[in-house]
Length: 329
Image (cartoon, one colour):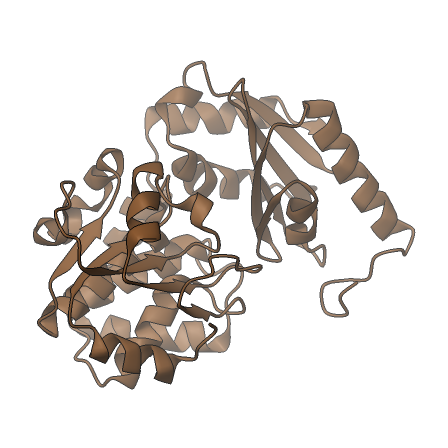
């Protein structure tokens, strides 16, 4: 059932059992920070909250000192499951799908197109910058005191998911992070931007260098990473997506960029654009989805099939068979 912010607030207030909050696998900062912000908020409402984040990602959020919200050993049979920042249950960590399916009640809060979760209550706002921005809207509607911790979490998620406010950003997004909203709590925005967005590990720098030196050009630019080899297998999928790819897209001649990650038994890809081309439509042809300027996919197709499908889509656009994102298809 699709619901609005007011209805999701009614549902949250009525929760009387335990709450499990979980974002998508290979979690990015929007997923982790929206989960933690929602968990902290529910904790203040005296709810018994369990926030699950994959163990390999926990080190990324040590800065926020939210360990008391995190549980890897879940022991409850009576609970509401809140899935955040995902539009289909297959994006849950594999060990959490059972908890979702066995929940007494399910809630989904997300900002991606094409929601197929079939949760009991779905709050989906695809035109918004991030799930963190949706959490902000819920907290403000409930007149919750947005303190420094919440501000840090929401700011981090928004910065990451908007590629430092360069895509999927509305005037409201800028207002939310302004000195009148999140920044008024004197968060260290410069540190957060550097730590969680600009700062790179040696492996991430090597991946950026590899992509730049191995770009191939058809109707779009693409590069293929062998995820069974170093340094690619030393960096998480989300970090390649959020910390490496945006810097490649800065090259002036690139309008559409696809980074294909070859795992041997499957292909995963990230697609970006900085023009009117809606790359979520390309992703949908490759069993994926996403936003206008940022989308992804996972499938078992061969590389040449992925390239052909993408080339054909872009040729159709050039021939006028597809209309831009504002006019739809």
